[in-house]
Length: 342
Image 1 (cartoon, helix red, strand yellow):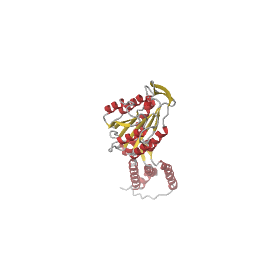
Image 2 (tube, one colour):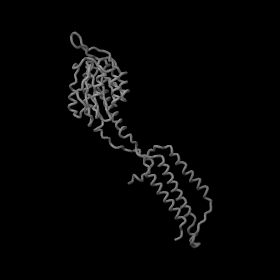
Image 3 (cartoon, one colour):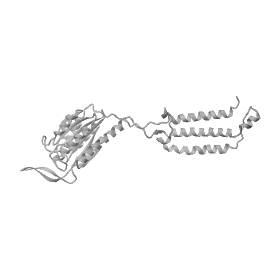
Image 4 (cartoon, one colour):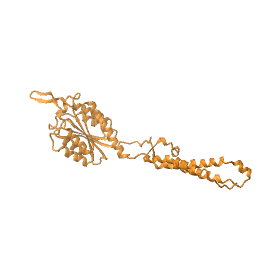
């Protein structure tokens, strides 16, 4: 019950704080009123003896007047604070249950360049490791896996069976599909893997280390399809910012040469912008892990905005109650001041 009487103003914030300046006017008005009326002579009918009248004195009446003025000022101040729309600054919104929150598809580039060794032991193994750690942080979200090179396939549909999903991630290897990097196909297949009964929050995390040079779908066409399905796409470019030991096929087998890292960041940024997602650049395993953590935070924030765009509720009841109580007190004092007869 104490919350219904709490008018500790310092514990509140205000939606309309610009009206608080009126509190400065209240004592000025009452002070002016007191100054203008202090010398007015009053008329009081008193039915008792002259001795009793003298024993009453003038101080008693003055204290009553001060008490009435104070209560009236207090009531007006409470109503002004209520007009400022107070809310508790320590408001703790309801906890969010994410168990039915997000459908996620991981779309991972498995082309030969993902074996480059600017990550340890290489880009693909680092990407697999971080993706598995990301799956471990899920709590009830359906997560699926799409793998692509020159074409794409669904390695695992969106599922709650995380151990099985992690096994599929561990088995990703290059060379099982047509060579190349089909970013559009990798994104397009991921979009089609999102079930028709998916909830409002649908996410694709698209990871690649190059630029699209294969496939039957242009990356931006797939991005428009994702936007139509109200799916956010977070894109990740994987690779250092200079050169990297990259596998190259030679007549004598595979050798590693230091080749420039060429990521089509403009397209990855455009895909993210088209779908309301965000583009990230990972230059090592630590930054890649940090990126997955940031995506997780962004999604939770969006879920909070979607479910609890609710602002803290306005709390005017305590101030109104105290204002009413003060006005009743002022009225009672004013009536008692004149009711001196039995």
